[in-house]
Image 1 (cartoon, rainbow, N blue to C red):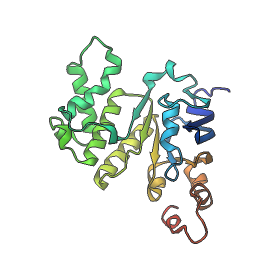
Image 2: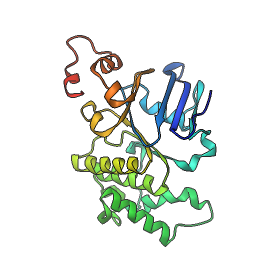
Image 3: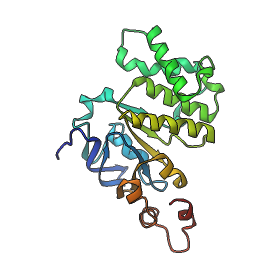
Length: 252
């Protein structure tokens, strides 16, 4: 194992994961260039979410390891942000959007400091960036699906990491919210930040991502979207049979 410095935001070596002895990931090796938007793409059950969770220490791998900016995660944890799926959130919890976003500052404040004016100002700036400042005082339970995702993204922005992991950020949201979030991804990339997103909609992969990792338990292909997001690689990743691949026509 050799860490790459400077040009690679994160990477894995021989990463394998199993749930109750059922293999999910098999010796996954991949790397994400600094400043890229990397889409992790593959069929249901391919291990896409498991991959980022294993990298972040949320799932224990059977074998292998991960590196971030040339170091183990515990040495650079504040440089890495994670936007999980919103399905596990208690949306009935009585809190406002601005309070939800301000939670992104807790990591740097520690146990004994409470957010003040500066932190709330950063939270408002993040809401401006994601296009929903008017929702600051709204209860989170009143938000639509797209608004919830944008609020989650704002919370990640407040953390100001150099590397963002996002698990299905565009799932079940309206086109307007998708466009607002894509613009944020482009802005982050232009600033030299790196985004790794689990993505399932093949027709928008090229629009949203400049790097792609096609995954189905193992890495089928990984690299620049123009090079690896091909019909042949997609067919392999999705195990598509002849005559059962009409979805490929909208993918590339």
